[in-house]
Length: 113
Image (cartoon, rainbow, N blue to C red; front, side, top):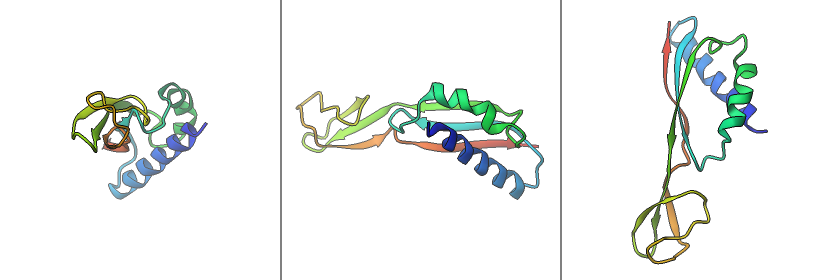
């Protein structure tokens, strides 16, 4: 279950940024997670309370901006939504594509006090 390590990484970022801002705690954390990032959202929800216990995020509201997967066909330049890395272009059927959105996994914003 790598979601625990993802959550612990988020906690580390929040603690470092809170310390830089000379703040005591985080009231809101905004995350941006792509559907192709390999994160199971239910698993992240499950491990979150344990990961943030006794940290600056313990009482923070959490908002997640989920990014859809988008690919661009290398053969016909069509931009299309993808659910899986192996999805082919719906226009020409090519499997050659670049991922242009959906692999994000970042802390977008923190509100601290």
